[in-house]
Image 1 (cartoon, rainbow, N blue to C red):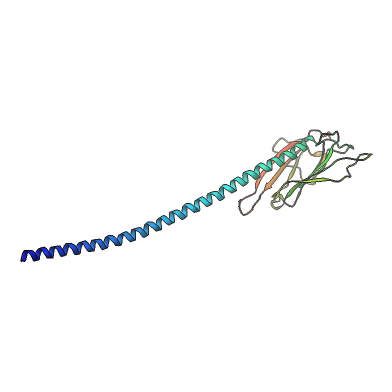
Image 2: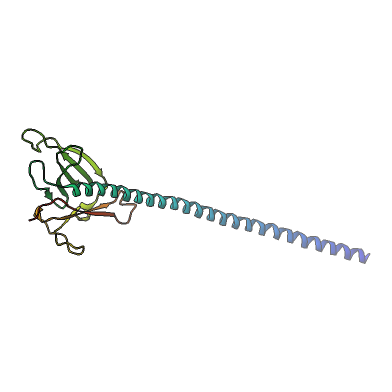
Length: 221
């Protein structure tokens, strides 16, 4: 009888311990699951944020590269015209205007034998190009100017940076640009510099592109 009682008590004790362990095991599982879900959610949010931020950064970089490429194409247009500058069809000096934000030269930019009056100027944040063909008898440059926009988001005005810089015949690569106002006959090389910023909220600083060209067909002073 005593032995049966002891076995019964032992069995009850083991069952009680087993139930306690079971309760403890269930409690830890819920906590662990909650922690695991929380960590997983944090990791998922972080990954999504990194992906979104990475895509945004990639868009900014791509936009800057595209802007830089477009800027270089614009510079090439200006440089090509500067290199062709020569005496106008009515005897005018090749360089007609040498301003910080406006440049006027005479150059043959089409397939005829006449030299057009070509003007580049910054209008707000837009760089424009205007061409006047000489016409009439006698020839004159009084006709309508054909204008096109060749660059946008140019912030040289805002940055107080000239678009056009001029250098004399003594320029070797280190001398400073001529100081405005300058005499057009002193200029031998023109540097074109564009400060480009499509979206000031996205890029920390404007993107700068520049190029330079010698005016090949100028008369000596």
